[in-house]
Length: 338
Image (tube, one colour):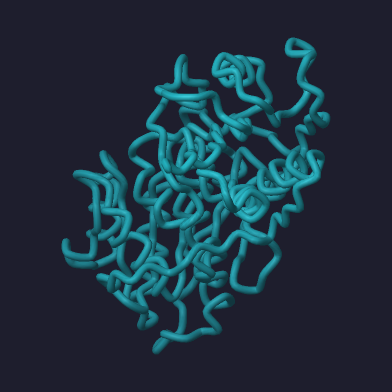
């Protein structure tokens, strides 16, 4: 007698690494609530490593779109999903994309242009982890936004105990000046820390600049010509003393692995995308008079003014605070603010 295939749940989250990791609590809630189902995640193929590392997804359905747009189609085959869950956005494009598959049920936020979806009301000023857990709770699925950890990898770290400095981001608005990253790396090296610089694909030049100006050897740069393979990147972060990074995917990886981090925010408030309150994490943000959730353009072409208010010495001191000074063998030098 042929066994009946498991019912399938399709989750749409066709975005980046940070987006995937902020959705871990929601994915874990679905996994626990629907243990006999096959959980399929529609996401970019480049996330196959991170998706597997969460241990929560049975299969990745490869799909992508430019920027943060909604894919035009999904390569779904076979019977309609038992359940489709929109963790991509507030629709209607993402709603309509999933509705075309005729799922038996669809979980999504309400939108006036898709009135047949009776979901909760979307809130602009809400942390990304909270947003998707609230969606599931509205549909009577318990979800805890702090249930965000992923397992540490078994791969050995290429630089155990190092401070990881990551100067890149996917938009100039969230890129702290590389000269300042170099100054931070130099101060940390002089204080006795091992320092490595990571770079995503196409970020080799700024990473090499940071390493050179900090007095680090070329071997201290990981990545650049391409992304660091995810198993190596996760191992590096998992065993790092601290990660110094802007508001980008590597910051969320540090949070997911429980690694100390210093995260630099500019155009978007940390209350929307930052780590949870925890002494291991320090967020730096200077919004000025405008304390709105999104005072700047997260995808702008120049570094955000709020990001530029963060000084070198402030970052160095934040690293010392989250690490308890471990690794320091010399006093931090005078304030440097290029």
